[in-house]
Amino acid sequence: MIQRGFQCRAQTSIFRGPFGIVFQVILLHTQIHMDSLAHKFTNRAYDWILTFGPKIIFAVIGFFIGQWLIRMLNRWFKKIISNQQVDVTLRPFLQNLFAIILQALLVVALMPVLGIQMTIFAALIGAFGVAAGLALSGTFQNFASGVLIILLKPFRVGDTVNTQG
Image 1 (cartoon, rainbow, N blue to C red):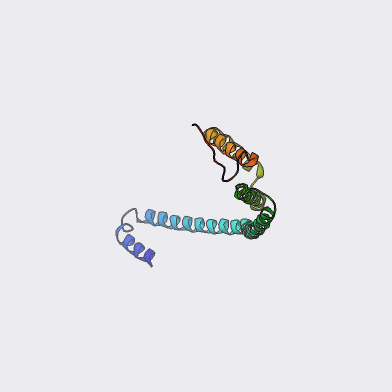
Image 2 (cartoon, rainbow, N blue to C red; image 1 turned 90 degrees about the horizontal axis):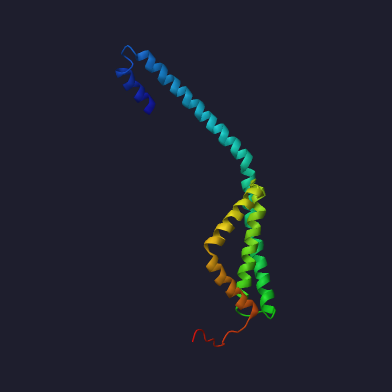
């Protein structure tokens, strides 16, 4: 409908001159070219959906099943830690560490399902680890000191500690 109005206005002004036939050929060629582009786009989109659609669906299903399993394992780990004689300050640290490790394993397990190569991922993680290690070296030292204090337990909850006078 819009195209007809354009063609009618264009025919009254542009197509009546000496170059009218040239303009009509250019417009017809552009319309044919746009139709072929649309056809190519729909074919590529259809091929992409057929190629990657099942992978994405399996990855999403695997992600939700993995999240459910991680929740179940976290509850199990929480029960085990509360039954054992684990220090109160160490429990949340171990629970969070366990959950983060399981989440990372889930992501690594789902990457091949999507077709992502592990070598590229390993290189990116290595580069990011070096950059973060250099940028946060002082912070990592403090974090490691805190972990050592929690693990070695030189003092417990309720103890009084005097520092620097």
